[in-house]
Image 1 (tube, rainbow over the protein chains, first blue to last red):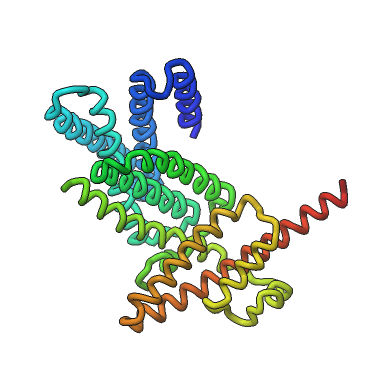
Image 2 (image 1 turned 60 degrees about the horizontal axis):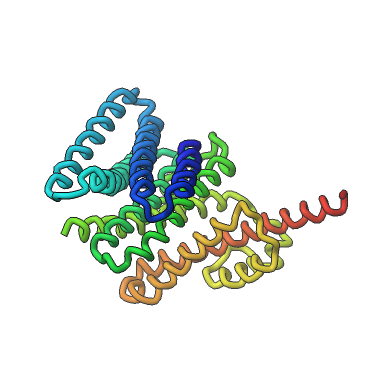
Length: 193
Length: 133
């Protein structure tokens, strides 16, 4: 959250000094977006560490996360190499999209693990579910942008709204649910277990 | 092609996360018992039904909003609309699904009643603060 606030302030100063349609602002916007997505990606791995804390698998999770991050970067670079121009700019956009989708898959796997391990901590459950909603919305927005380029303007305005959801949901989870509050996992599955 | 697959996966995952998120909100409020006065006002005597939801939401709108529960009520309202949509389409052909949507709708109504209870308490606190000031 602190990183997000700092990035927003720097973005505003770049916007103020160079203008909305300047290449400097576009470059900084996508560059900082990648940094924030990587930050969120490591936050997700820390949620993994919380869920699997009894297995003491923190080191393995961290190594796996770094390997996956590097793999995503290489994959994104390989895609960008096929285009001729604006390689650096395209790389930031591509890696951001791919990391969002990888984040979504990882959140889904984590949600599956929560249900399987019968995790009961309400706050943790809320954090993971709101992260899942956030990643799904972002991935869907990026995919729609690629599929329907005329919708670009509408979807560009949708991204900041999506961005507000996660801080609100997480703030609510930290504020409303104490760390020791428990929830029956059977109440969360659509098909009763 | 890849964008289409990503879109399809995202929509399915979004739906699943959204339903689970709303269920977690509802489950968290289900432990709270309703006071007799809220039971009187809402007409929920023993257990809530899905049809109570609209009435409780109308009562909720009469109370000053607390910033804490605004987004939660909106999320569960959207979930209730989704359940209504399922009830009027898919559930007509599947009796099990129909029973499930009814149960979920009643949980939504109970959630709204708990939110009403909290808003009444919030209004009382505000009034008490004004009286003290």
